Image 1 (tube, rainbow, N blue to C red):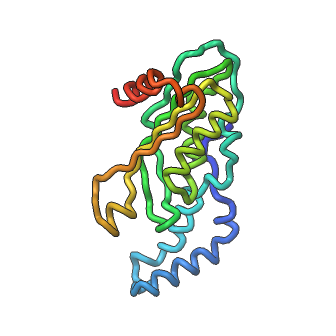
Image 2 (image 1 turned 180 degrees about the vertical axis):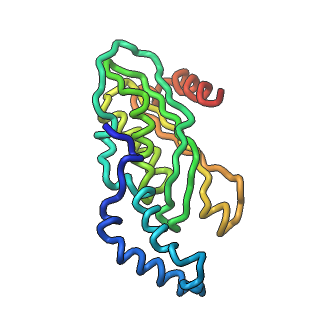
Length: 197
């Protein structure tokens, strides 16, 4: 399966003219001169950006995990520091950070790059960090049916850092725990220790 970078949001492309018109109108409404040189191509640039940053709408995140493999490995598998970029659905402001995914297989594993693609499929749409965290865990649990899944997502939200309370550098951390990780404190501790190193 191709990576998310190969996808564009087709709805944006199909509605290019309207989106460009509305971006131009917003620029006018905030007091800008849409005829000045620096802004002439801005509506088209914004539209092209939307095709890319909202590409997640074109993908079923469950399918991103693709082909899974039979494997008797029953110890913790972690892919950490998966960088993501998303857009807050409340302010349409960017937020970004790292996702860490761990799971204990029960006979099936996914290709490691598929976990990074799963993060992209879930984050490249209007989102909240709490939902991203839960969706990744739920999809891993549903598709791979592992013994346990743990997901930790760290994020810096421009809607909080650059506006509102204006607290730059503050980070939000969310976690989701499924299966054996719920009861096994040692497994949780191992995961948290390994993602810190």
